[in-house]
Amino acid sequence: MAKQRSTARKSGRIFRYSAWDAMPAFLVYAHLAALIAFFVAWPELSWPVRFAGAFAYAFAIGWNQDSVAHNFIHNPFFVSPLANRITEFALTLENGTPQTMYRYVHMRHHAGNSDRPDRMGETRDPISIYRHGADGKAEPMLPYVLMGFWRDDGPFTVARLIRARRPAEARRALQEFWVMVAVYAVLLAIRWEFILFLAPFYYLGQSLSFLIAYYEHLGAEPDEPLATGVSTYEPVYNILFLNNGYHAEHHYRPKQHWTEMAALRREVAAEAAARGVRVIGPAHFLGFLDPSSWRVPTRRRRREPVLT
Image (tube, rainbow, N blue to C red; front, top):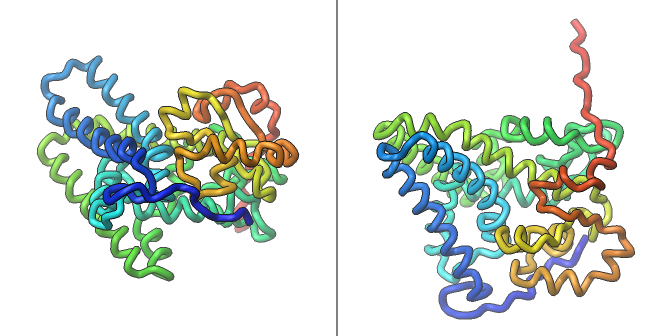
């Protein structure tokens, strides 16, 4: 297993690892403020603006979960536990996913590294691209992306799984869930048409996150520590997604701070080349545009017939 360490430095009384975390911390609350502004302005907006805002809302979910919320899982931004806890609630409300539950599922993802099924057909990683594949091949992209949201364990199942080892963390997860339910219930009562209009775009945003996850691992080698992810060094994507493109490097050393991913790439470059780390040209959510992705064989598991 890859050596787990963070090379980031504590930089002050506010930020736990780096003063650069002021940027993602600001983005957390900017995202929440934008969502609130969208809700408040809704009655005055034209339908073209409403649709534009809804697509931006969907993209923001996929972007946040694979940049800001993702980095917060591995390296919480603040020294203050209270500030981190408030940020967890903010992330929960803007992404529509309890942050502590997201953390649990994501850490299981790292435990399995998008592994292939065992003899019983199970994977350690609940969102492995091989989980519903066949013959050692990944599931095709469309069913993985479109069905991923519906395959996720429900919040009470996730809370029960967390509680088995960390009861206090399970309580935190359920607190986030119930606060989210209460807030959106109030918004539904105030402006039901806003919530119902955004519901399919919420699903679209979650599906975008699965699309990113798919091309973060398609063609990778789950059993090779340095090659369990697929990287892209497209500069605009890495700026906007806080270096999420360095995904093989991230799975190799998950605690590496987002500001130090380029340095990690240089550190492991020779070994990465020797291990055959897969690199694509475009951003992960555009991975289907990379010709090398077309050559990765996929196959979907067939349902076994029910014997009566």
